Each structure stands twice: as structure tokens, then as C-alpha cells.
Image 1 (cartoon, helix red, strand yellow):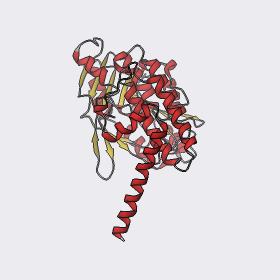
Image 2 (cartoon, rainbow, N blue to C red):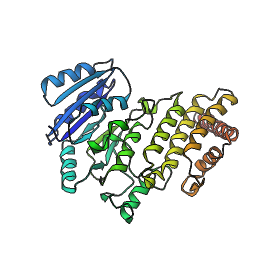
Image 3 (cartoon, rainbow, N blue to C red):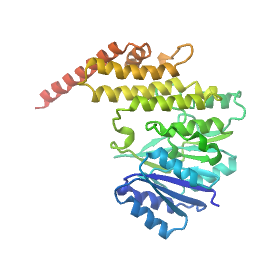
Image 4 (cartoon, rainbow, N blue to C red):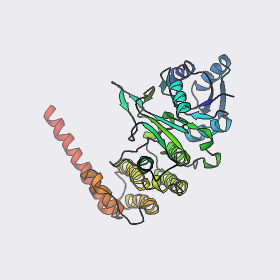
Length: 354
């Protein structure tokens, strides 16, 4: 049985898949199984997966109907046998020492979970890391200052919006038993599906290793990816995500304390997307959508209603105060004013350059 299960969810990433697979198979660490989950791809990915499996006995392929990245990860998790698991995305790639670096550090420190930094690829690679400092955190003693600081900042690091631990599963190695099959995310969830799995696992971990300087993972930002697409069911999915996290974190109050800020981040993204794409809708239609978002917020908001607004930018404070107070009509007017101002600035700029 391999020590590490590498699970790759795959959906129509043919231009990048060979690079991803090559980077995994060329790892200096060899004690892993590679589970490729073809999630209903209709390009060349299924053939690439099957051909790779014919050449390397460490590879297993699962073909299933399209259900989304979360469903693909869960299918891979059910097939996994390793003590630890990791979930690279099929359009990214890894440096050869990544697995060896992480697995060596995990064994030496007795860690249940390792969270690493990464490079966000673009014209110039951008180094990224977690908001919490590198180090080993003993979470068996949550009252101790170092552990308590970690837990309090896991979901929200104190500046809106920055998490202490970035929710991406592709930059983590996790002890498999922390990912209880009964804790599989609601299939409705799209945005935040990584968070729905990661933060409950962190709540059960005893020792967490943060390695921000270990940037062997290359994240390819694709504007056309699912996470960046407009979704008319966004607020319904956000409700499933946030209520699920609220339930899963009831026994971890220190982590759960950051949930309202994560909720505001998720709901602000949805409002920005909706009000841009629905800018020609009637005011009544817009108010109905924002009232749906407000209902989600009401279930997550702090019991005392207190939000640390000094940690928000002035623009965010103006917008999100209206939202948290249920002033959806004023919020729509504010968005309209900002959109109008941006349009006028663009017209004036174009006039100066013509």
C-alpha cells in the first residue's frame, strides 16, 4: 500500500493534462498511487488518462459522469488507500521535490496536515503563501497562545478578506482519516468546495505544519475556470456551503469565529457577479436576489452582531454595512452609482486618447 494517494480531478483540461501528469510521475518521492478521476470530459482527457495508466502501474483511472470537482475528489477519495492524500488540479504542475519535501517534513514532525506556499503563474510568477506563519502547530492544546492564535486566524487573518490558511486542497497533504466519507460536501456546492472539505479537517487535526516557503506547486490561473464563471444559483450554493461549515465547526469555536468574515467574502463575490450580470434586471428582481443573500447571512452572522469594520476598506465598509443591515434597496443604488461612475470614467478616458 502506498503512503500517499495523489487524486487528480479532471474535466476538459486536455491542453495542460500531460504537463500535470509528467510533473507528478517525475517526483523524486516514489511511494504514491495516482488516481485520475475523469469527470465527464468530452475532449482528449479520457484517452490521455487511459494511456498513462497502461504505462505506469501506480496509476488508476476512474471515468464518471460530470459532477464537478468536488464529486471527482470524493470518488478518488473512496478509491484511495494511502495514509495521506493530496489533490493537485489537472491544469497545474509540480516541481520534482514537492512530495519528498512534504512527506519528509510530515514524518519528522508527526503532522496530520501540511499547508504549503505556491507560485501563481502569469507573465511573472507570483509567490503566494498562507496568512499564518510557517511552523508546527500543536492543536491538542487550543488554550495555549500559539495554537489559539492559529485557530482564531484559520478562516480569517484579520484583514478583509485574507484567510490564515488558504482553502485550496491542491496545496495540502492531509492524513486521510481526517476526511471522513460522511463529511463529503453537499453536491450543490461549487464555489468554496475546497473550503467545505479543508476547514472541517483542520478542526480535527492534532498537529498542522505550515510551510509557506516550500513553493513547489505552480497554480495556473484560468479566467474561464468554473470558479470564475457566473452562476445563477450562486446564493443557493453559498447557503449550502456556509450552513455546512457552520455545522461542521460547532465543535471548533475558535475556527468558527472567522466564519462570518468568510461568509461576507463569499456573499460579496456573489453580489458583485450578480449585479454586474443582472444590471438590466428590474429593481424588484435585484432586491429578491439580494434578500436571498441576506437570508444566508442571517444564519451565519455573529450572535452579538459585531463586525470589526476597521479591518475593511472604506468601500467595502460602505457596501457591506448596507448589506448586513438588510438595506438591499440602498445597496442596489450604491452599485448603480459606482457602475455609472466607472462607465463615465471609461468614456472620458477613451475621449482623451482618441
